[in-house]
Length: 127
Image (cartoon, rainbow, N blue to C red; front, side):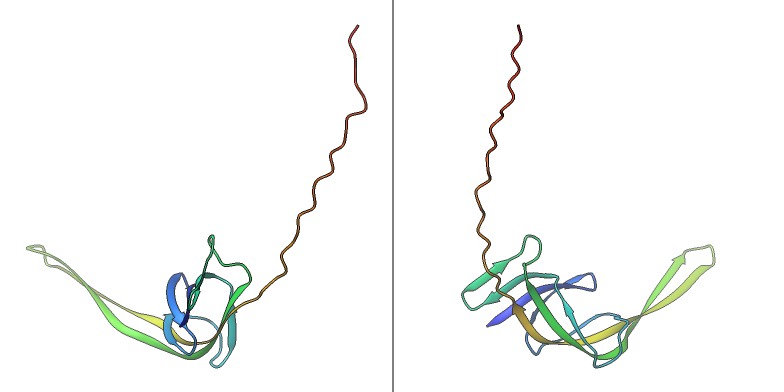
């Protein structure tokens, strides 16, 4: 099973291909295709790639499915014997995204050449 841990919209999520997750609002139109390179971990059966902090040359492609609002949260403040009551509400704007592809681009390993050592030719002698 192939899955990845990504950092998107300030939260870390475990995703696999064709998953749909809910994240904080993304200011992009519906059906737009986006990519993120903030991939922290990729697991493909027995192969595990752990990033420090991110996996090199890894990308996760996703598509925006819909925008909606979350449930309303009510906050109520109350102090006894002083007639103090306050109610506030909050509804988060959310976006559903569908993970389309998890990929790691393989790059050729760079061979390091040995550094050239320059000999010092000028030597000062003190008389």
